[in-house]
Length: 112
Length: 115
Image 1 (spheres, rainbow over the protein chains, first blue to last red):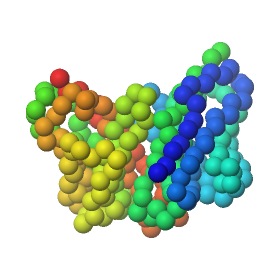
Image 2 (cartoon, rainbow over the protein chains, first blue to last red; image 1 turned 30 degrees about the vertical axis):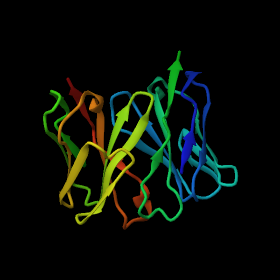
Image 3 (cartoon, rainbow over the protein chains, first blue to last red; image 1 turned 180 degrees about the horizontal axis):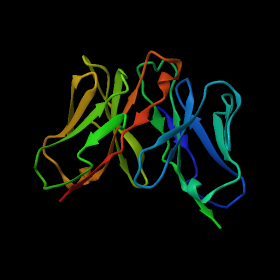
């Protein structure tokens, strides 16, 4: 079985930095994704980690530790438009035929 | 034009009715997926298809059926709709042939209300 945990809600201030954590327990591991989803809209791809370490993409970075079953998404210089849900998703090992399993998402509110 | 389209975007139907949600893509991807999203429950996989001849059940397939009419088209049917199928439905695609093909790309969603 697979289990993915992330906080339900977070609040942060415009211009600040926020870290959204994701822990997972899967039967093997073959990659972790982060998606952003604005209310009522489709999820959009943010990042993909398959090796340990930090992947940076502009204001967004994603970190993975496979030994700890842990990832985080770091958002810098927060803007009001970053208010959205952030979904962590994991692909298990040998899952060329197994799609992603999504966490329930973290709803981030950015306040002035 | 959008790469992944879903029709209709909104639908209201009555209990017991049969309805079909359609998904089309111009991305040339071989893999397609249907999810539903409910508040507090996240995205849950209903069915997925890795090519036209390959259909697989996801974690919540009961009450649903699918048809992969062509590589670019994947339809979801509710044979006899019930109120607890009220949800936001997403179609997604991915490409097995590219390194980044593990990434799934989502359509805009269909909001379904079953009365």
